[in-house]
Length: 333
Picture 1 (cartoon, rainbow, N blue to C red):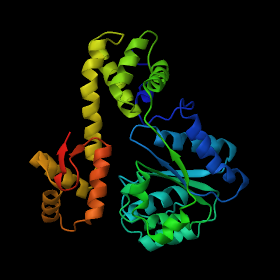
Picture 2 (tube, rainbow, N blue to C red; picture 1 turned 90 degrees about the vertical axis):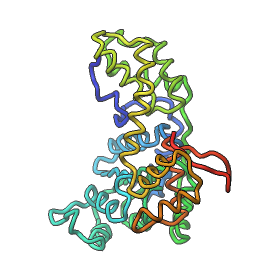
Picture 3 (cartoon, rainbow, N blue to C red; picture 1 turned 120 degrees about the horizontal axis):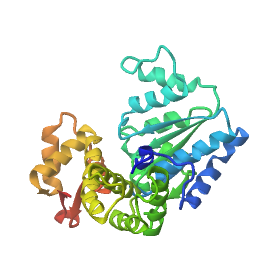
């Protein structure tokens, strides 16, 4: 029943994006000076997981490259490249690569110098999950790079800006802020309809099935596409050429588990330590959690950074919090 499996993955960036016209216009306006070879202020995309932030950033830059032919761009997943060195290396790798640059041996100062010397065409750097950066100084490094523009992506505005020093915060106060909200059920149906049209043979999935998936996804496009993909896999394994409500029902927990496992695998070592402690205790108060965490890691982060980590895991539904202040506890989903 599947004709093109690529479109069933959340990383796929369609040429035609639906129900994000306002956000695309806002980002396009922010980046428009590039078409006149003028400097661009940083753009900041924020909102819940599965709201289309990454897709819209990549889609908009790809369309911009059709106008500015020599424009380059580099995507950096700061959940994976969360240290200053890793993030800088990833940027330099895409913007100003060199045969003498090596991931294990090139010093940080050399990477910064490479950026300072950059005199190539305009470049856009997309920093996804920017609030995951352990050293926000990397934003200052990039901000000072001639011809380079940044798109920052995070769940919440305050969680990113809370970690910026005043020097950098003052430079980013003019940031173009574009808020993303959860998709409505009808919007998710439209997104799924496109994926089904591009990825399935005719008659493989009915409209009512797409509505069931959208209802189960709770406004999260990543979850909705995951359910659709898993339901298609179950139908194929059953030897049938069309999807049923039973396939969808079985696919919902599978998709949620698959997404959760991927999110767990990309946790940083400190985040994973916190997550494992919560799993072991089933439910634990913040004070006990912090104490256990400090005993288990060699160089524990500050309490403020730990709170940021816990908030990030809540955004991705890996843990939940119950109660307020001293009565608060954390537990796994």
